[in-house]
Image 1 (cartoon, rainbow, N blue to C red):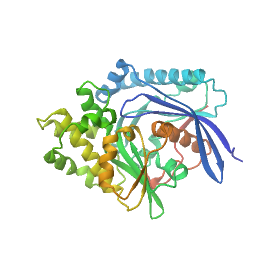
Image 2: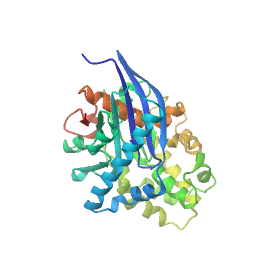
Image 3: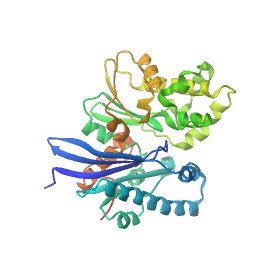
Image 4: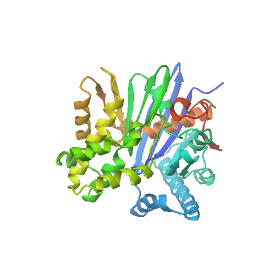
Length: 353
């Protein structure tokens, strides 16, 4: 018999490099899954680590191996500090995503650092981690993994949209869960906000003060990725190869670049989340970008945009990786082939006890 209650720590580091998200969550199963987030925190990266993680895509094999060891140690210390700070004693597992450095499913390869076996000894808890690799081996994209959580924890919404480094969505279609990356989001917006000396574009104020460049918008919308069928996923490789060169070929003000890219994000989301009178659940840092939400409302006038409480907005991915870990401990399906394109549904993640 499986337990009905699980106390876990979900750990997530996203491509937007905001930091490491940690959430201490209690999951309860009684006919359906429910949850409560008790403690949550984002630990920002130091400037040194930000530089390393931004540049790691260019590292050679030995540099990546070295980075993986040092990042695993960093992650272990952050998790241990979180446990100690909040005096957490009931922990069934720490469920950690790690940090994606390389994501090339078309080449049968994905790398999330921070998932080395030493993490178990350093944290001294059961660890469930490295959720993506098995799916890629099974012919899948290794992403997105959040949809099983959308399906089982947020089933009352027509669409679950995450506005993180990339925008991604999940929804049910013909009895199956469908999910994929829609477009780059905060990876691009943060980059141009950085150029203006800001960490990010607070509430979208910088973008709002810019002018829309229709020609650039059209070229962005015409990129081949947007015509590809799902399953599909995005990584920084796409942003570096396609998005930045295109935007930077326009000698326009940085605020105009931000304004145009916000419109682009909204256009692409509206193309996908187009059922009339739908409920669209929005999480991720982009949920705080009031200007982006305003533009999205213009494109989806009959849709109810639901933005939840701060904890759910900020820690939904940590929450769901905690949930993936619980399902893995129960040896239950936590990755859907309808979403990733893998040969079969499966229970993914490595358990270190």
